[in-house]
Image 1 (cartoon, rainbow, N blue to C red):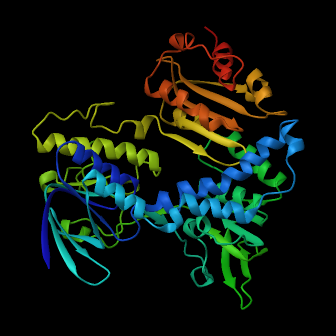
Image 2: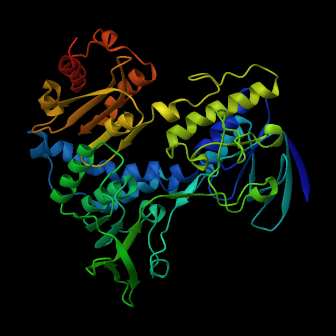
Image 3: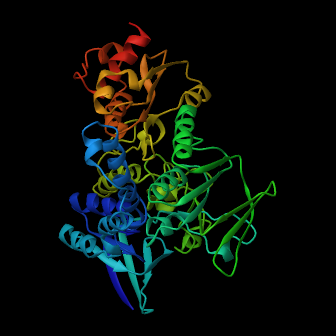
Length: 479
C-alpha cells in the first residue's frame, strides 16, 4: 500500500472530471484523477462522439438529396460499414492513449482503478491487480462519476441481454430488426441512426416521442421517423421480454401485442454511478443522486454542506442537468471555487456569478440530432407557465424564411420564442428543422444575457440566412 497527497482528488475521468482537474491545476493547485474505465468517459466512447458520428453521414446524405445538382451527383445508399468505421475513429477505437497523454501534459496525475472514499478527504484506489493506493486531498474531493443506463424491472429483460446506449453506440454491425424501448433523446437519435443504416426499427414510446420538448418538436420527429419506415408505437409499454434460442427477441406489450426484433435497446433514463464509491463512509446513501448547494458541494438531508465542506459533485451525479456540455460548465465553476476557497479568496455564488451554475436552471441548451434536428434553450412554454411566468409565445414557420429556401428545397421547420412579458426578455427558444443546431448559440446568448427585446431589434441577421427567423419572430411579437 502506498500513499499520495494532492490538493484535489477527482473521482471520474470523463469530460467533467477532466475539466475540474484542469481548472484546479490552472489555478495553481495539484490534482489527481481516478478512473476505473477509459479516460475520457461516456461521452468520448459511448455517447456524444460515437453517436453523432453514426448520425452525421445520413444527415449529410439527406442534405445533398434536398438540393438539385447535388442530388444528381449522389448515387446509392449509405455504406454502413464505412459509417461504423468512421464511428470507430471518433471513439478512438475505444483506447484512451490520447486522453492519458493530455492528462500528463496538463500536469494531472492519473490513478487507474475503483476509487472509494474511506474517510474525509481520503480516497482508496483498488487497481485491477488488487493493489490498493491511498490518496489524500488537502482541500477537496470531487465526485464526477457520471451515470449509466437505467434498466427497468421488466420480466425477462435482463436475461434477454438488452442493449443500453453503450451497446448501441458501439455496435459492430447493424441488426436487421431493432426494437427501442423509450422515446426520449437517446431513443429518438438511435432510432434515426439505425433506420438510416438499414435496420427495421420499432419504437415503443410509452410517454411519446421527446416528451420534455415543445410538443411540435416531438410531433415532427415522430412524423419523420415514420416516413423513414420506423414503426412508432405511441403509448406502448413492454410487459415482458424473452430472447429465444435463435436469438430473436420477443417483446410482449401490456396490451398483449407482440414485437419481434434481433436486438432491443433500452433507453428510458439514467441512474447515478455512485453505488461503489464509499458514500456510506460520509453518511450518504450509496447509489443515490447527490444533492448539492449553489457551489455544488454535497449536502445532507438538512441542505447543508457535509462537515468541512470538502466533498463536491459535478456532472450527471448531481442530477441538475444530464448533458456533457452542462457538466463541463459545472466543472469550471467547481474547479474555480475550490481554488478560491483554498486560497482564502472571495466566493461569488450569486446568480450568474463566477462560482455559480445558474445556467443549469435558466438556460440549458440542447440539440437532439434527429431528422429534423431539435435545438432548444431555456424553458418550454409549458415549463415557463408552470414556473409562474407571465408569458407570450411567438411562433414562426422556419421554412418561410428566405435563407431556409436557399438552404434546401422544401425546407420544413418551426421556431418558437417564449417571452417573459414582465421583463420583456426571452426565457425559452426552440428550433426544429435541418441543421438548426448551429443557430442555437445565438438564442443561448439572448437567454443568458437577458437581452431586452427592444435591444434585439438592433441585432440584424445577415440576409439571406436562416438566422433571419429572429427578425420574423420580433416582427410577429411587435414593437
